[in-house]
Picture 1 (cartoon, one colour):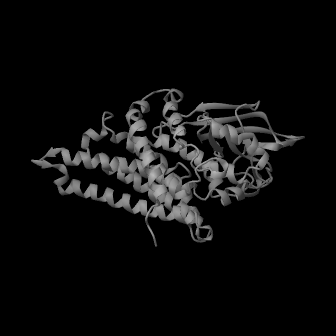
Picture 2 (cartoon, one colour):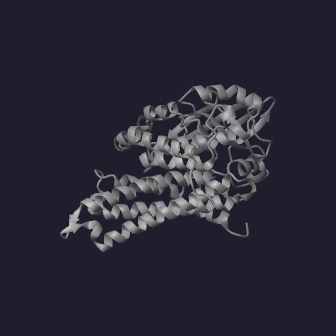
Length: 391
């Protein structure tokens, strides 16, 4: 076994860390406080990230990207989230959907969209699956005709007429290309009744609804996607009819692992700030880190961070090893790392004591951000069901 990173991985890790330190950390806390979700989105920083190559990191080199594997994306995602989780999630969503762009689209579709994606640093990607009445049903999946995504696509000549709404969509309202899972057969469950299509903001009948205002992860944008007799051309269909879930299973193997990497970056930032505070805050005649009660909390933060990181890196490595990868590894990693990150952020806030609860300290933001991944990218309860051995 070789646990060393390659020089290329170390270089990209340093690039991401320096970018987070220079561009993200100076603005993140103040930007987080902006009331309007649309005004809050940090376009200047996100564009700068695109200029240094972060946006196209997951695309293969032959398509104009950097060809980063899942482990490399995890390394970069952790560093960006060390700066701010929301900004990291913005890039990570585009990376994850880049895998679909690479593996599902045909040559004609890539010819239409790839040049603009490569050239425009405001061109991000998103996937539309979740709906007001369909979240975990899509993930487990509960394959009943009455469960799962209900936004319909009905064939009409050379088009599909789409009606319905998606919500909580990461990169919703900022993306310029969406892979949307639509119900093309309402007599079947999601495992056979969903089809992926490409939707772009210029399509008549497609609009962005409410921009969700979130407790944490506030520098990423989530929104409703509304389809009102929207006509999506047949040329925008990217899977066989009824083949969306099979394609998702085959081509999105790194999604949960990459998600876990971002929230781990938030946990690391919380731990580091708590460690620094513990060394400098004096009570009882000595720095509080020398009091066993505080020292134990910091030790637990360190233990859970290091254990999470090693699990994460192993899972990411297996995702690139063909037949070695087990999907349960991704589900398991997301559950363990997200819950460890939440515990780390909670303990880190406790180290700061009452000051940690004040908005003038960084700790409450870390806790708000870490909380998001108890459900983001799939609830942990749904992830647990997917890891059960009889499934």
